[in-house]
Image (cartoon, helix red, strand yellow):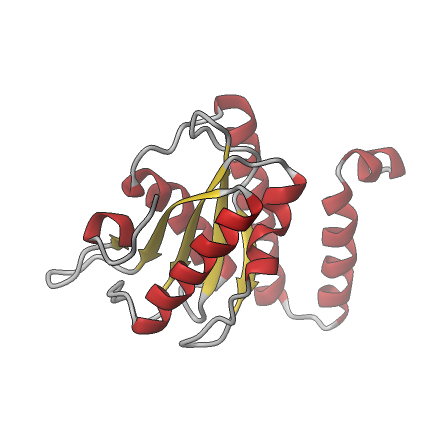
Length: 189
């Protein structure tokens, strides 16, 4: 890739350096995961740029984010927290943003990390989403508490929190996602 191409796509320079570092270790499996995730994020960004889809329900957010979460965490090996930035008509602004990546069963969430890109890109509202590596999307007390905290932080910033979607794995006993708004577990305004 030429230097001009790197300037046009700054993430490519980082990906190129990351690839060289990984290749020097001869770890082809890790390289494939990194490249798959980069390709998926690029494809998602292109889709959002061209289509500018509106996200009006939690299922649409789940369908958009589930493949990214799988790629980011190598199939739910750890929690990851994503944010969808929305304009005033609930159309997505840019690619979904992976704000934080945690451990097997926890992800330290802070409003500063969640709202950083929302402020930079002048988002009117956000949809929060994270996965549960166990596959069970049932919200924990911590999920509910952090959602309340993020709603309050969003009010201060003038950014409306539309929903918090917890992604799991579909099974006979559990749904593939839970919307805190739909369940009425948190008061969204």
